Image (cartoon, rainbow, N blue to C red; front, side, top):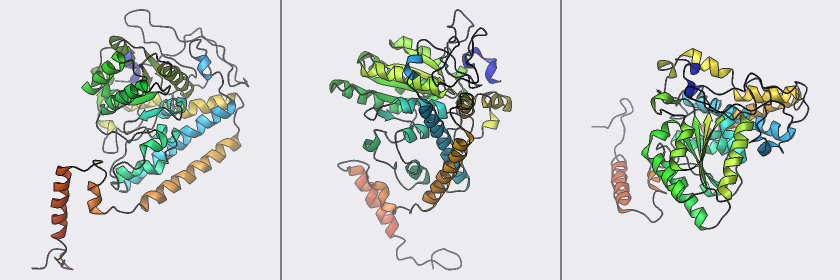
Amino acid sequence: MTVESTAARTPRRAGSGAKRTSAGAKSAGTKKSASAKKATGPGTQPELVQLLTPEGERVENPAYDKYVADVTPEDLRALYRDMVMTRRFDAEAVTLQRQGELGLWPSLLGQEAAQVGSGRATRDDDYVFPTYREHGVAWCRGVDPTLLLGMFRGVNHGGWDPNSNNFHLYTIVIGSQTLHATGYAMGVAKDDADSAVVAYLGDGATSQGDVAEAFTFAAVYNAPVVFFCQNNQWAISEPTEKQSRVPLYQRAQGYGFPGVRVDGNDVLACLAVSKWALERARTGEGPSLVEAFTYRMGAHTTSDDPTRYRRDEEREAWEAKDPIKRLRAYLEAGGHADEAFFAELDAESETLGKRVRDVVRSMPDPEPMSIFENIYADGHALVDEERADFAAYQASFADAPADAVTGGEVK
């Protein structure tokens, strides 16, 4: 089944009557085309917020243009840099896993625009609750990318202090972070703060009861939280249409808050829609659901083989919508970046790749007993018991010399 075979999984493009900006447009804010039409009946495609077409042409959207009206050419180059650096880091992590340096890695390839656009929409005082794939959001929040790798190498429980960047530790349990985010957001509201909370989740997580509970609590308590769902079409090997009879963003209606579907490969649209949602949250208008309609170009994780459940034609169709190529086309057409900029960025990204390799390979092995540290703030009887049992097990090897030939115990 190709990506175009199901209406619920096909991104909206601007209507045939939409006008495009000229290739020589020099202003980052220049736009001349009409926004995508709304769905009008059964069988029609859902509305999709899009500001940049896959060809890199700017399209007009009266509802969301104001949220990116102040974006300058310098800002556009910064967004492009964020996506390039994130992709380079991610590629290096995949390679390191294949070389045995990491136990596992969940690649974000293809989802850079969704993460960078939404990440750059947040303020420093906002709080982010990620899943385990938000490497681009971590980059935008100022988390050193090498810190993301410790847990996947097995040398720590997380790798960074969440309070340093208001970016929570990665959550492996599917959907549970939405409850954490909602509870935190309820606390923000009780403190009368004007900050917002973002909970990232995938399309597969929307089938979890945790997410339904989070939506209910967020709606009832008018919590200042944005649920940012990256619909990358596949929950491991399960396609979206086998999980939901309606587009995911429409689920928000049943809980009493708005939902929006955005082109997840359009960094400008993701930035605009995220700003809208965050502004609502900060001003007391409650939660919202953003469905970033994107695609996971690689495997679910490095232990997965996507060729077993999806066709090459599907990936090829999405390659034409690549978020980085899209923004580059817009930068070049508008004269906002030259070859020197791209060459310098390529060199910078290679420097990042080398640093990531060097840092990972030099990570010291942890002391075996450190696995019991930082579990409970005030200690726990069961953890104490397990620590003692493990210490006794380790000690049982202390006085057992190994046979140099067989590697076993000397009898």
